[in-house]
Length: 109
Image 1 (spheres, rainbow, N blue to C red):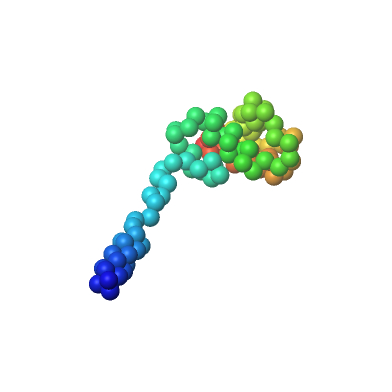
Image 2 (image 1 turned 120 degrees about the vertical axis):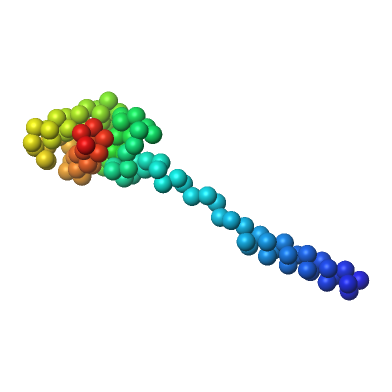
């Protein structure tokens, strides 16, 4: 009986030791764009999809519709191309900065 306990104890020790060595879960591929980071945009998503998700992530207050968000991005890009680096988009400053940041990364890099 004592020998069986020793064998069982060794088997349990072996299982626990092996499970501790198991490899961790694989990390997310670094080339997948992260909408929380405007500069991570790639063609993994359409420009509109990435822009909408990224802008909505940090939007303060009532969120506009997707169409309105895209319109803000296009307006920001037109203003930037015309030489205005800080266009007045008619939204709160924090939201405007976010729209401008994403417009630069997605629509008018």
